[in-house]
Length: 137
Image 1 (cartoon, one colour):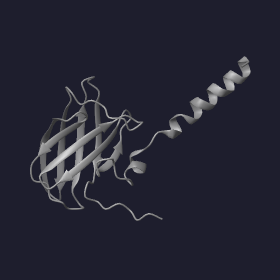
Image 2 (cartoon, one colour):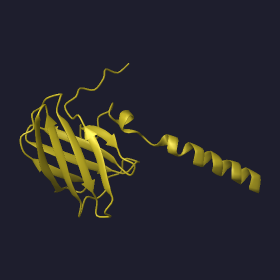
Image 3 (cartoon, rainbow, N blue to C red):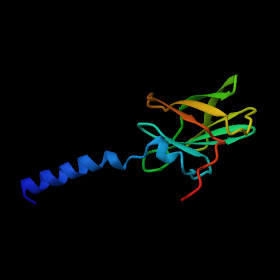
Image 4 (cartoon, helix red, strand yellow):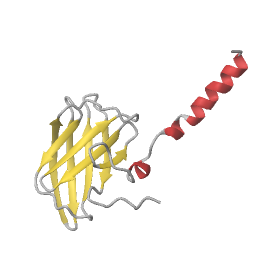
């Protein structure tokens, strides 16, 4: 391949690469592998599975491959109307963090998550875990 062709090919990859990344808005309209709501941070895809008695945050890379949560820390701020509570997320399984408590299965429930992996780079995202998905067109 000559130099000009290589430059054009490299430019095309660089221009289109970031366009392939998912945004939180795109991921919010699909269920994750564990049935939870998906979101994207600059470095990760996050899936929050919420039940009445626990929150489980599953962590993936941008290719949806599991990311180890060994040594990770996290917290979730849970909001429902004027009620606010914070829970600590503890490593759970190979790529998850979990908190137990009472979480009302209400579509108005909001959860703000802060996650710090062992590499020390904090990631934050917000979820509406009980919000129904839009109907498929």
